[in-house]
Amino acid sequence: MPAFNIETSYRLPVFRHRSYLADTPEAAYRLAIGDDDWSAERLGYEPAGETHITGIWQGADAACRGAAIPVPGHFKETVQRQAAHFERLPGLPKIMVGDAQAGRVTAAEWMGKAAWPISVGEAILANAPHEPTETGGPT
Image (cartoon, rainbow, N blue to C red; front, side):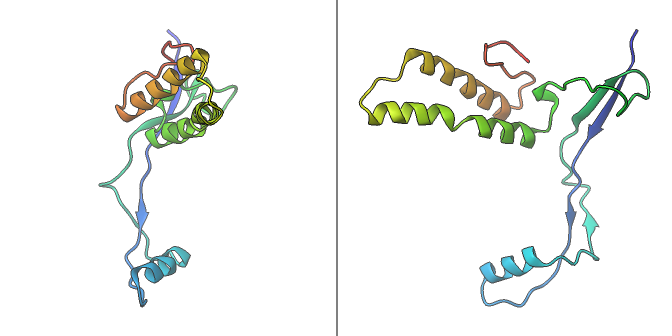
């Protein structure tokens, strides 16, 4: 039976509590964001992120040696899945809006292509174990 070395991760928030003198909350936000002194940082174990797969290699103790095996999207961190999906989304509405502005009916081909990102988005929102590929099958 083959062995696989899998790297799993979770995000651990680092936070600090610090007071800022400011005229408005907006000014205080800017001071806090611009403050690079993290000497009083603390780790937030309670709001830790979900466990997700960050790498896999074939063989015992094979991490970072040789070629990594691609990790299917549904094992990656949800926020990364959301970001990757967001990058894909603007294209289809641009085509459909362009058609509408030109008085054209959107081609059936593009209406079919719109079903894929909708189903991927629904899978991400539902934290579903499988996301359909562009051809409709699971990844």
